[in-house]
Length: 174
Image 1 (cartoon, rainbow, N blue to C red):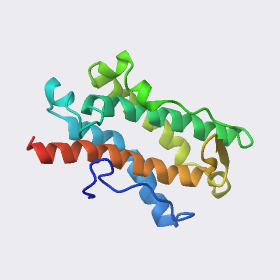
Image 2: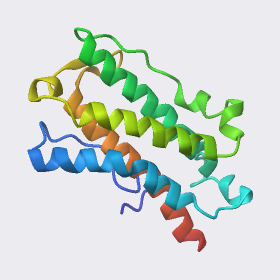
Image 3: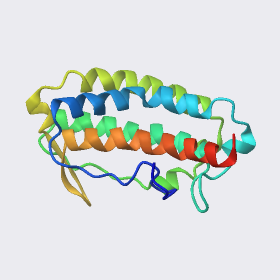
């Protein structure tokens, strides 16, 4: 674990096309994200859920609501890339989404949404061909993104946010 509270599992880095073993690990990470997130927030009070994971950071509640928001966007990006020729995707202002009223609600709906979303997403991910993994979408700021790079990113993303909560719980003795 990193000592930088913003990046408890380190910053995302992509070393190029993953090996079959790395790809299996990325898929497993994504598949396990909903259970890992649910486990790390189990038993937290509303006061704890409303605690920022670091100074200037989101609250645990906002993190929990952010993960399905982000993963839903990724799921749609995968489907667009699989059905269109290098579609340009729409970005979103995740910091503004985290301020909307639904990000202040109880977390159960977002946990259930993440579980349901990942069941569908994993059906797609576990059935992609080698050629499918090379398909791309165009990110307005990052350029062309292959699905295999996006897979690695979302493997990291789930671990990244679970670690935000894990490290907070460890630091505060929860």
